[in-house]
Length: 181
Image (cartoon, rainbow, N blue to C red; front, side, top):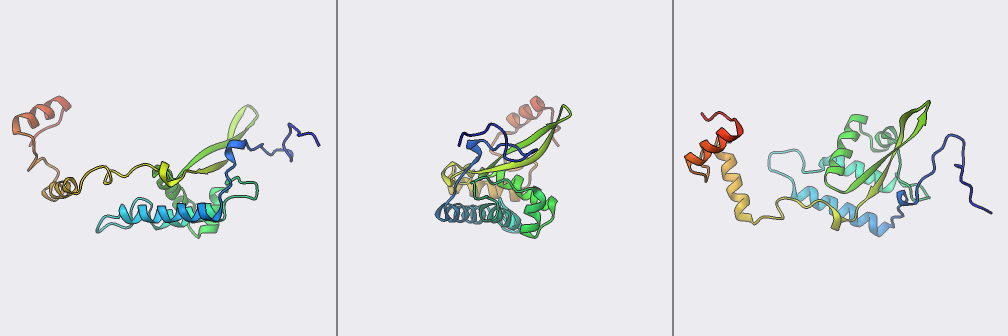
């Protein structure tokens, strides 16, 4: 049977081949384990969660296990994700932005043109392998630097204890138009 250039249903939009992603159970588990490791690594004492937070983990699980159709397209609406994950729509949107900022997913806005105006129909979500995720800044620096940064944060953000001499601090403050107290 020849392939038709029309969509299967009137009003539906064809899905491009690059928007299809078939993930096996092992791939899903690997992504979830890496996301949980990222969450534990990025957790700061006294803060609620790390880079993804609890809702980010829930929404990611929902995307991985409930989102993809049998054709390999992961394109649930925000409303569907909210219903499936038991969160509010705004919480799902924040979680998706955190997941995307971490480099775990990318989303493609898909829409249709109605009366000459583009309207978003849905988003397709594509998963990156954990090797491609955005690197954490704590992995790129030694532990000594982290300890120095922590000490500097405890001293305050006014420049006390800065490694720059006072003359250089003043010159930089003047260059950037900042007032030095």
